[in-house]
Amino acid sequence: MNECINLLSLNVCGLVSKFKYDVFLEKLKEYKIVCLSETKADSIDCKTIENVASDNGFEAFCKIRKRAVKKSGGLCTLVANDIVKHVKVMNSNLEIVQWLCLDKMLFGTEKDVLLGNVYMPPHNSPYAYQDMFADLEMSLLEMNYANYHVILVGDFNAHTSDCVDYINLQEDVLDELGVRNCPDIMEMYNCKVKRCNQDKTKCDSHGSKLLQFCKTTGICIFNGRLQGDETGSCTTDKNTTIDYVIGTPSLLPHISTMLIEDFDFIFSDVHKKVTVNFNSMISRQAMCQATEGSKIKRWNNAKENDFVINMNVLTLQSISDLINQEDSSVNEINNKLTKVLLESAENTLGRTEGMQNKKLYDRECQKKKREYNRAVNKLKYNKSIENIRLKRKACREYQTAIKKFNNHKNKIFLNKLREAKTNNSKVYWSMLNKRKHEPVEPGINDLGEHFKQLNQMTEVLDQVQDRASSSRREEEEEEEETIYNDSVLNDPITEDEVLKASKKLKNNKSPGDDGIINEYIKASMPLMIKHYVGLINKV
Image (cartoon, rainbow, N blue to C red; front, side, top):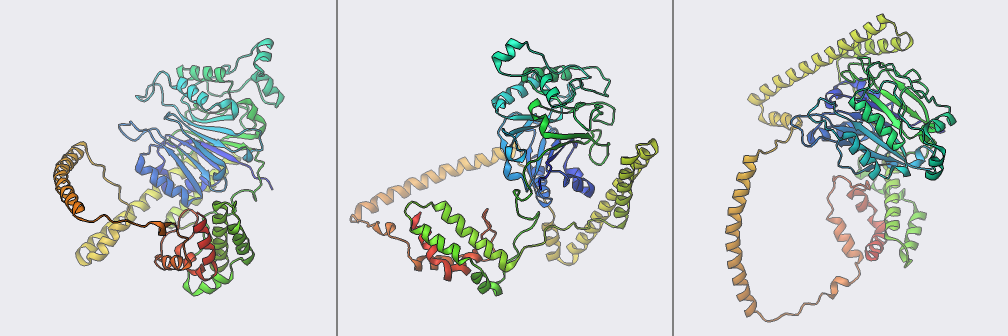
């Protein structure tokens, strides 16, 4: 069965503050790709974002505004774990866009898809500058975008009204360039040529530059053209359209719908959620097989014999044959050994059931959350003024309940901390260490003093090294010349050496990227020591 790849684009106006709302995280889990703009994150916040994303089945790719006086701007793209192996981040120094390459396997297209997550500062922002759209065009050219299907999503802060975003070239020019006009491609895919836009604001400077960008690159605006947004719905609560989905017309047949969802205070200050649904051609079975949040259970010494018994003997025999072949690859042997160990560990120890949704809040929060969800569902079927008012009321009450709960939780923690400080110092420090601490960045004066001390230490060390080198030369002159035989370094590694080395491996250590822990290696020694020796000597 093929699965739909869906994308969410949203200006969150501060990402970390949204993590306290479980409905926010639950909404993100409905999408495969989430493009967030104006995250207002720094390098420390990026670590928090990556950890929260990992706990919820995503891999986070963050891009921060480096020369900011305070937290502002910033981009973050979340990719679901089951498709992240088909996604590659493209390097770019431009802070207004984050490029990702999506493998053509995800869409069944003849070319990969180049995804751009965009945030353009407003024209009155101190971070805005004259050539932003020109720099975006240059960055697109550097990506060799002609080799991709291109789609850009995000907050462009541009009012375009219903102005034309394409140019019609003459037939002789089209034949010479080997291209087709955008309107012709749109008509071929039954897409509206004349786009609709409910935003009646006049086209501003950002809008003119965005339209010129589209005309120059052959990219068109999808808002007000695709199924689901035929009327060109506004993308903010202020009845304006400044969030866009734009792309090459060749991508149109691979998009099923585009939706502008209802505004919600929990998700953004004024922006609405923009959803794009693709026609994915990749099967669920072809996606990552691991269950979301699932991993092999902890090692149990009592199951060591079962671990050895569950090893695939036929695979081990094929590995032995590979080791004896002169032209066999070391990486192939290593991958097969890793597979044997992991399969045996999974069959012996089993897997965890995956991350469970923890009840982090009290009954009042759960009650307000249910009322909020009911109001949201009611508004979907009947967009009356009364239902809009009820949803906003439920949203405010839910936010108030979460804030009240967090304040109460912090108050209880501080009271316990004060009591532990007086009565039990061990518990006191244990509670402090469990809290997440933000590292303090040193000031410029501290760094200056630090390097002054280093320079003083360097002068003393130079004097000590000079005296040590002179005495060493005297000793070397007195010693007789000794001939060293290093031929032993080229001798083959023996089983005894590998066995002794394995005994020095420490237990309860974290695995590497391959998932192999030291206990697997030590337990498999009786059956696989010859394989380990053969692999090491082959290297």
